[in-house]
Amino acid sequence: MPNFGGEALGQRKSAYNTSTAYDRDKIHKLDNERRKHTHGKANVKAGRNPKPKRKAGAADFTLFLVVILLVMFGVVMVFSSSYYYALTNQKFNNDMYHFVKRQAMWSVLGIFAMMFFINFPYRVIKKFTFFAYMATLACLVIVLFVGTEANGSVRSIAIPNTGIGFQPSEVAKTVVTLHLSNYIASNKRILETSKGFLKCCFILIVPVVLIGVENLSTAVVVMGIGVCILFVSSPKIWYFFAAAVPVSLMGVVAVVHPEFAYRFDRVKYWLDPFSDPTDKGFQIVQSLYAVASGGFFGLGIGQSRQKTYVPEPYNDIIFAIICEELGMFGAAVVIALFVVLVCRGIKIAMNAEDIFGSLVATGITALIGIQAIINIAVATNSMPNTGMALPFISYGGSSMVFTLSSMGILLNISKHQRGRE
Image (cartoon, rainbow, N blue to C red):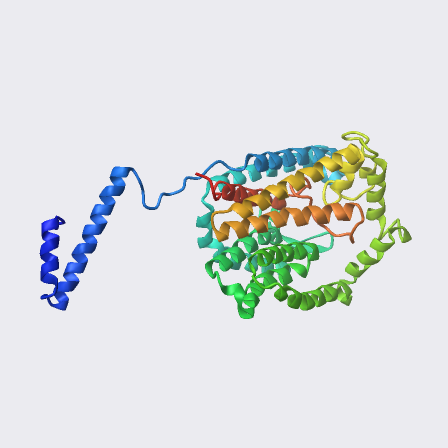
């Protein structure tokens, strides 16, 4: 054990001027060891830790409660909007519980996934974001060639001998959020240059283009998530004005190109759905009838009339059924729950302990908010008709599991907030 006493220190000081460079270096090292030793003992005596490790707190209870309420409400509404369709369709063996059983199963699985990510340290995810991103890009390419077609679009990959499939575009929403956030957090000054901004845009544009080939609405959601993450982390606003021009041109091409003529028709019949109420404008017209006939308190759960006309009322158009059965009051409550969810997400993002957590929370909050806005806007004919699930409520396995997994990550971030002891 080195002698750290005052006498030994005095001897080293007196010998310092006559010592060689090698001896002086040894004296410096010995003094450094003495300081570390004495300071460490002082901290131990005082009961202090030089760098205390902050303990994780409890997850945001309000956010958790809102998510559970939305999931439970979704199961009820899927049953209410689907039982007639399933009961009168031999494809589902006239089983009125066909859709609600599957929705309940996916909801339970999603809640287990959410609980796992609530307790899984979100910082560890940083190690896997690049691999997940590349795997997702591979799936987005594969689905274009071997994907399963539904309603005229190829969006899902079927798992052999299981009857189960998943949509890579649903995975992409979360994976792009994680990888883009990690890339920006790991290169803190990258957005200060136009070259760095373009690199981040490239990470975003590649999956957006692959998704947009068959699913423009989901591509818009992924683009919106990326823009929100870049906006809150970029010090220069003019980048976004410069990027708006090519992005707008891409959007115009995606609508007016002859190969995607059906998208232009959606814009046309959005402006005047009653010009073809029995074909192109049928779903919009029936949706408007449902919204208008609900009144203030609605017709009651299970009493919707329009669900017998609207194709797949349990899916993208489910908000119209909510308006019909629960009225303006019920619709307002659902919207209020989403507003609370988004507000809590913003608060979590603002108080996150690190940049990665803040950006991930921003992206996940944007994911929920953008999807809810699009779905509600379509049901009320405030924007052209497009396929977009209402988070936690619309029928769908991939959407439910991956959305709840994202909420688990957001709730995990809420456990690590600045100012929390």
